Image (cartoon, rainbow, N blue to C red; front, side, top):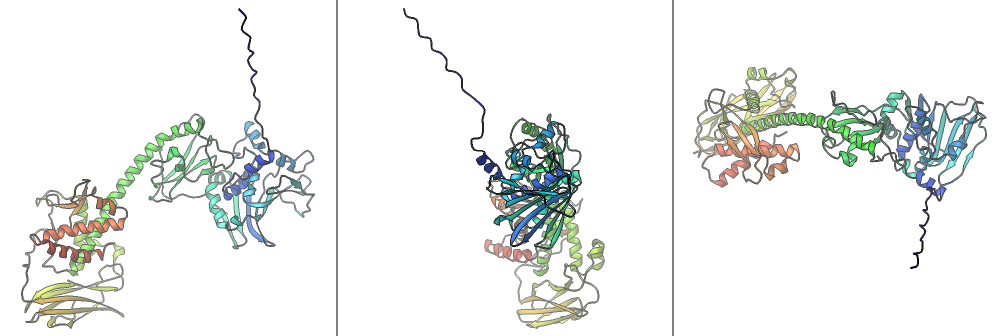
Amino acid sequence: MAKAKNRSTPPARGGRLRIGNDWNAITIIALSQSNPLKAVAEFVENSIDAHARHVTITRGRERGEHYLRIADDGDGVPRDTEGAPDFKYVATHICDSIKRRMKTEGAQGLQGEFGIGLLSFWTVGDELTMGSAGTDGRLYQMRMRRGDPGYTVAGHKRALVPARGTELDIRPLLPGIRQFSGEKIQWYLASELRDRIRQSGVRIKVVDRQARKEYAVEPRQFSGRLLHQLPAPAAAPGEIYFELYLAEPGPDNQVGLYRGGTRVLAAIQELDAFQRSPWTGGYLQGIVDVPFLNLTPGTRTGIIHDEAFAAFCAAAAPVEEALARIIDAQRHAEEEHANRETLRSLQRAFREALLALPAEEYDWFEIHRPGEGHGARSRDAAEGAAVDETEAAEASGTAEAASKQRAFFEYAGPLFSVRVAPASCVVRVNESRTLCAVPRDRSRHTVEHDLRYRWEILEGEGRLDNVAGEIVTFHAAPEPGLVRIRATVTQGEIECAGEAMVTVTDSLLPEPKEPSATRQGLPGYTFQRAPGELWRSRYDAEQNVVVINNGHRDFVFAARNRALKLRYIARLYAKELVYKNFPGYAPEQLLERMIELSLYTEEHLK
């Protein structure tokens, strides 16, 4: 049998990657920087790496061309064997940064490592002129143009006193860059290079010659409370620095991600791994500095998701847990404060409403004192009742009771407005009713000094007693009718007036109520989550609270902002107050009362 023919294995083929078109690669690299301000920040970083103590950025216009100039007093461009700036090395060693080699030799605090930062001038302007002095004291210049593969080194430029350091001049600026003001550059650098400025001590100045203004770049300061005693993040590649502040919640609050003092991302939640609480809650400001992260070379704003990034995410987990506990405690305190403020706003609004409505038709809830039965009140209800007592004392003109509740800074100012209480009432024929003028200042504090009163009947029949006093008695005529009464109050040269409408009738449907022996006011409120159930609120007489269904779709809709939520809760209180005051009334009558009370209450909601 013939032997099988030996088949030789084809030789393996391979090799090294290389760039097929060098100029095309340079173009891609030069245009990879999407943010021109980031390019300016890289120029300033080069100055900081060159140990500059002062950097001046000048924005101006010269012979019709907009330009941007960055000058520093650093070490300048490295020199060749003849002592001149080695511009040839700078132009012919793209992607071969000398800083990378310096880092491998142990140099610290250097940011550049790719050798492409200078090319980002393509995203700023058309031509770059780079100047630096040689050892002979003369100034040398290199010029590069956008879209041109060549470069030129100018001859010796004479200067009386050659400046130390490096100067970059970019002109003309691209059309979309010309609106970058000096102030905008200042704010960007203050955030972008915050820790690099603090650590190096460099002084950066922005001179805007078009706006004729000058700005000093100061490291950005954060508001809020600095969070201490956070867990120390442990990561094998290196240390991680957290500087976080707890601030009032807002969409502008962000935590920046930095590497070695230079900002990489304005908000850490731009990374998918951090699109969760506490980073997205709007409570935090500050920075997270991770020196060992690896960045995408082109934009310097991308993170390579390698082992170093995974180590950072793992080390941040304990810090996230601690932040979540702190924010939950802060949110709980804010909710308690908001509930107290809401209750005070409701009490003020209802007090104003009941001043204007007939007292014989509306009555407050009965708020029992401790030991009088009906259980213990909530803390909010107790505080609300105290506020209610203070305001009732002010409304009745009892200055002594009101002064016990007012702080020093709450004393009344000049007269601003006058209300008549009640602003609307019903009186039987041949009977009388007292009316009170309530003068207030612009802050709604009761004014009590240097006042003169004058009462008069504008329309209708009747008689007034004590027309020069704060409280007047109206005597109804023997015939029914509408009576309009005005109270005019004068304080020096200030004069204000308020009116009341009195309905004189020969019969009253509801009988006047007996005064209650218990204290009166608005109860507190609490939430009970009952999604899917139709009830919105109910009054719990045993606990003296209005229970609000915060799972109802109406509450969820109203909770989008504070003003809408406050109006919704006010209407629930109005519903409970009307239901308490008019038991057994027909539905259409209850609706009429509900509209009436809501109208007078919502006018004073704040």
